[in-house]
Image (tube, rainbow, N blue to C red; front, side, top):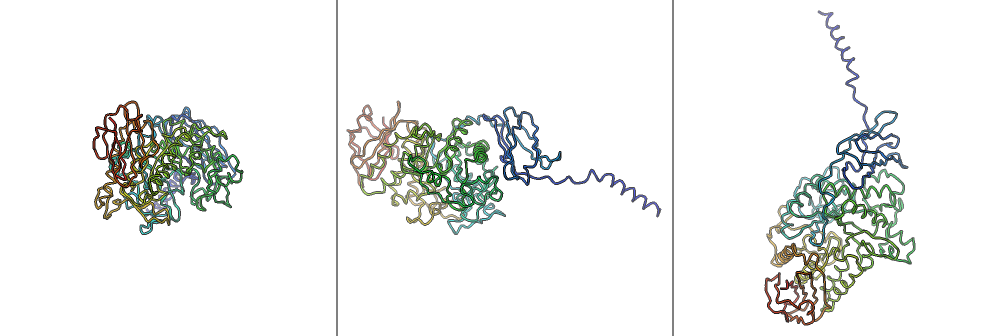
Length: 620
């Protein structure tokens, strides 16, 4: 028996040796980063360009084998850690397949790619339009639905509720928890300030320094949570508008450590700050130096300016927009700093989006008070330099400024500011598609703009909810969220919504602790927003206004079936509106119902109206 043991051990060792090759671990494969990570079949444009990043990935041979997928080209650039892979998906079928990256016949990397089946009706989605009322929300400041994601391991900035410049903890779950409030207020679309990852060292809450274009910031939630929020919002009749930025990224973006090409950024590494002189785009006398410094200059040192003239970056940005539209089910995009990126790319981007989604809508931010500067970008405008703008909508900053100043300034003569602004609508190909608003995240609260006068708040917001265009209100304005009149930092305008955090003594969601004035404004907005939901005369009716007189500014919205008269009385006290000059609109009208007070009028020759008020009359 003593001799048998070594023989048995030898037999076992031999058997193990024979089996060793089958058990040996495979060589570790390179794990490349591929963006976009997946795509869809059935797109109108079958082209797809993948950006692949990995150590010396350019030294490999790319192999793709999937029904209907044609590998058109593979491009290596100056950085060997990148490849750009062009596919034709015209005949592709949904499914998963491997993309192989080979060298000398061996797989150095394998990426499992998926082509998803496109959702039925995706191409026919309806964008936001003048039947909607947008609700602008800064996610970090609205509601904290999941305190567990306030701090995420590995991310640079931690929560700091003691500092308005710090992260407060609002998230996607908080938004989802209050969709019924949003819908109940009459809002039919939500524009969210950027949700994408901003892994910056400080002041990252606003979202405008993207560090990953394909990833929701984990402090808000996940991509899947964003998609689930969008689906639930849609079920409740709320459209989703995504805030995007093409002009710049954050200095901590992952590609900043290993850029694909030297011209991926403008003025790099010796950056220059933009002049912000928007006139340079259209100025027929402008120097090339001034045009370039405006467009290619950086906002701040931590926001590198992207060079959209680089064709690979241009394709990357366009595809990224389409990816989010398709993945989340967007109904619109708000494009930040619209005039700063390369303008030819912006036109191409609009065309590409319109090709896939003909009824989609995009609104651009061009913060200027000159209508000629804004209208330059709108689709259909004939420009002297031949530029064909493809943008459907713009933020109507001139009207915002006109209304704010007309109400704030002493006396009734300032009402001409509103009249003259709207008289310039001839410059726009489609003024009814402008987004009109009393305030946003970059300016003092409307309540503060009009010297904290509740009557003026109601006059202004009432006008924006009934004038031509697509109204947008800023979260918290409905409950008079306020701040000091002096401007120290934009964070003052971005205070947390009351009731969004456990322990809040006041809640705008439930009404707990609101003052009588705060409730009054909230009820006022709710009433008009809900009323306008099915009022086609407000959505698409024509606009006629009259030169201000006797302290009144008024306008009509009308179509073949309905007429609505909106009257702003800026007189401090009760005043009589004599309507003889309005005969071209009032002839044939036998009376009116005022929707805010519920009062009815059997005669229209004279109307006695309270001071500092807005009245909305449905004419009989």
